Amino acid sequence: MKRGKKYQEVAKLVESNTLYDTEEAFTLVEKTAVAKFDETVEAHIKLGVDSRHADQQVRGAVVLPHGTGKTVRVLVFAKGVKADEATAAGADYVGADELIPKIQNQGWFEFDVVVATPDMMGVVGRLGRVLGPKGLMPNPKAGTVTMDVKKAIDDIKAGKIEYRLDKTNIIHVPIGKASFGKEKLQDNFHTLIGAVIKAKPSAAKGQYLRSVAISATMGPGIRINPSRLS
Image 1 (cartoon, one colour):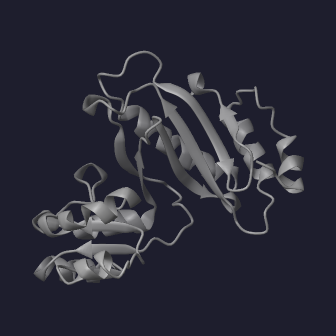
Image 2: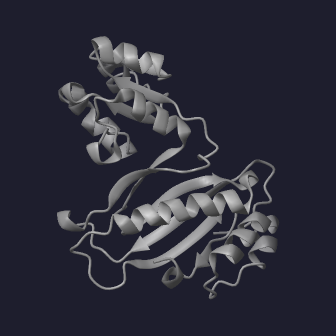
């Protein structure tokens, strides 16, 4: 893959074989975020588990202390009092069965997170094929299947992120914007790492945090020493 001049310049700042401590890594990520827009900083965490086994799945959600810097649009599936509660709490969209054809047939996806009350999961389940691949299916572990819709919406708007393993046993999540500065980004990062370590399955053997890296949207990966995080 051919990289632009800017990338090549900032890539020289990062030694690919070095495992940095957290402080150094976040100083570097600031220096490598040189695009004209406010780049997102992402964490990439490879775990020593096998996600093909149900007892080694790692999935959950955590509220980042400084948010993600992104405005999150929330869709809530609820009826009656709970629908009113969701609207009052600031949900962007609230509905029930009538939303199914809109999403299924019209390809409407103007939302980032889906919350549902448990009684609505039968309805939402019909959207599994379209919501699942996009990572939008509500899930009790992530706190998005709940009767407490107000808390769910408050947490999401405050900067709650969901983390889960991909097929290669890596978690990829945004931890903020480059403009946050390294202190806030480090706070968010340590909050995420703490949650991932807490979620370690009892079936996981050997080294749990295999590799950890951060990167800005247009920047190179910066590897962090995982042995100093656990």
